[in-house]
Image 1 (cartoon, helix red, strand yellow):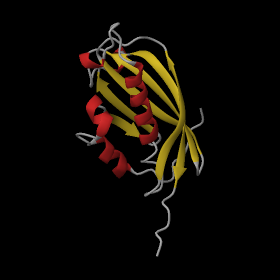
Image 2: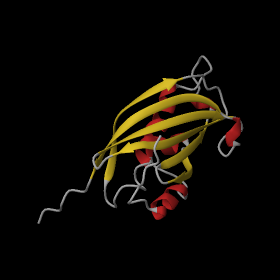
Image 3: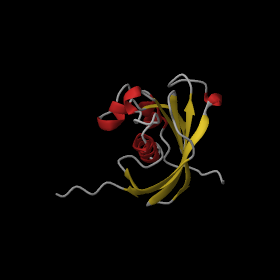
Image 4: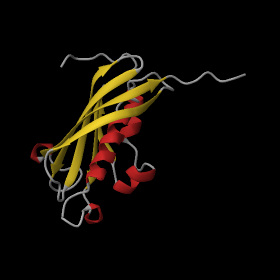
Length: 158
């Protein structure tokens, strides 16, 4: 994979993401927190709680999908021009192994970017001990790839 250059990267935006204590909506309910990042890369983690486990003992796949969607779009904000927005237009998930506990770590990496779209890969690992656990102990449980639509702000009407 070629190294991409991100002319509009903002460490200030990345620092703001990494310092968020809480978010809103479903990501706050799930306890998703950004833990690491850099130009074209963002990591989010969450704890696998008992109420997210299905009757057969595995984490519901929709929880993984929400985590993936959230980090897939969010990785764009520190590298887009200020005021632009990103929307996930599609993504595909390959679930590789069941998740029964511990924590999840989703690492999004921008693999291609034009002025209007980006392609992002997300690897999700399951690790013991919940968020903040050692990154080396995780097993790969999902791989995703998605596309984001990138848009500049609409001019204000006078």
